[in-house]
Amino acid sequence: MEGSPDLWDFAGDWRLSRRIDDRRAGTAATFEGRAVFAPDGDGLAYVETGTLHLPGQPPLEGSRRYQWRPGIHVHFEDGRFFHAIPPQDLRPEASHDCAPDLYHVSYDFSDWPVWRAEWRVQGPRKDYTLVSDYTPER
Image 1 (cartoon, rainbow, N blue to C red):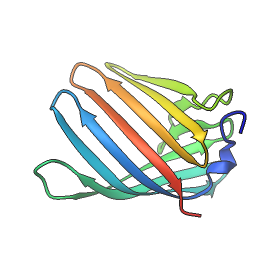
Image 2 (cartoon, rainbow, N blue to C red):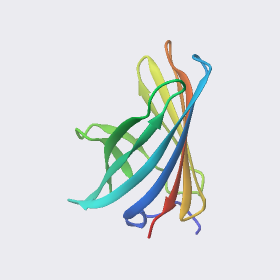
Image 3 (tube, rainbow, N blue to C red):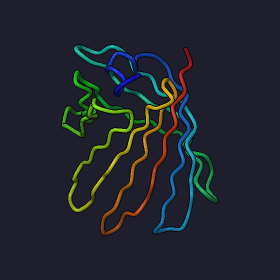
């Protein structure tokens, strides 16, 4: 693969494994579940579901939703723009300024179809890294 995957390459079911390192709290959490990219209008609906494991707490069920659109533009569930995945290389980066916090993502598609999204989030009350690994269930 010479560049980032095309939008439709993501369609299907994925195993999702995530680690959340909270520098401010000095803790690490994990999330295990699945992500589904399903056709939705001119793009894909992203739905992830799974179990969040926080230190010293019972497991919590969680989910999140996004809209992925042509050109690989990622939107929040309500349609607001989140970020775009630049198509030029196998390790594209993007940012989202949600004042007062800054979200920066580094994608890694070099081992496609296994891929990773690593978020670095910093702000007055946030300082964490979230690493999500995706493996196809196809």
